[in-house]
Length: 467
Image (cartoon, rainbow, N blue to C red; front, side, top):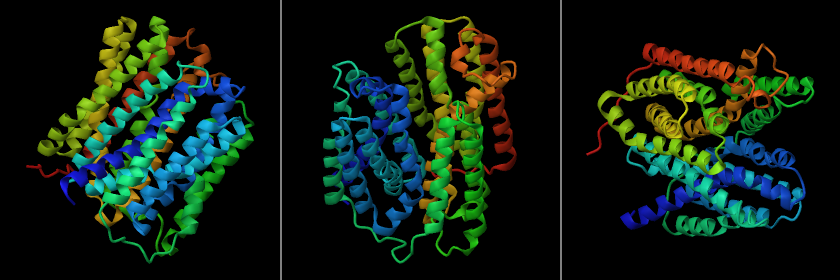
């Protein structure tokens, strides 16, 4: 492929990923405006719109497999065109029912957009470390853009929220045309394979059910319903594990877990996200409690956190090239643990500038770990199993992010007199210091445990330095 064409393809792939990411971040800002326009409440709207994630999780196991089946070109064109169309329809919705329906179908196309775009980008990259590092930077820039765009569209007029959906159309058109004209012809690796319907149904249901469970776990819903959903998830995963060996072409090749380096990277990445990603939700609340600043200053702090992650990528690459993946992962987790503990001191002796500096430092060390752990998963796996790696990583990221705040809330409430009858936000002003700091220390210690496990069990895989 000619260099100009190659660059156009990469831009198109990044655009497809950005469409999904910007959509998610913008929604956080415009939700109150949508509720006001459609004469409903943000709480009801959030519950209904979560169907987007439920449908996405349902079809996520199929995404990478389908790309290998019919080719990345057609899968990406299908995803971008459908995502753009139903984003437009969501922007034109006149009732909450219409919006929920369009968002549900859009979630189907989202399952084939970002995950497939990520895999395509990595396959076109020189190596997995360079690919994951640069891709992570692009996605974070998109997330920052989503924060800014969402703030703008939330403040123009009562109906300006519709622009957040309509603006996806030109992006989708560009991506479809660019992929169609310039994406290289590929020979699909599993054209003759039949779809694993058992795996799709069981795993798709499990991912969606886990997301539903994360949404209702802390709400005042009958406990029996929560237990029933949890049992269904366990049964579904168990059934797939039992029938896996009898499936000729499984939708996810679980044999990759026989590689201990992949297993350690995947599990530690999942647990790290589960015990640290609450920061993205809680620190804005902490900052508001300490300062009572308006949302602009709080958004600046969030951007500082993301900028720290972006600038960590170059450092992560140097560490991996010279000292190996394990070293970078360990340094990243030790950094996360240290910054968490340091943040307590800066909370006690509050200053806005130092708070933002701590946020940037947290983003930096978290970026060291995330870059190395994500890249090593693809590096150590067989090249013909990258679709399974991608599906597992995408599913793990989705589930861990969904449960991160839930885990934080449960831990917070357990520390607060072992009373879990109220949400942590309801009592935040009364018992902020003592209970919150206990949770921070617990999360920091969890990273130390992961460090010990990685040092004792994982090989120090190295990447070849690019000249």
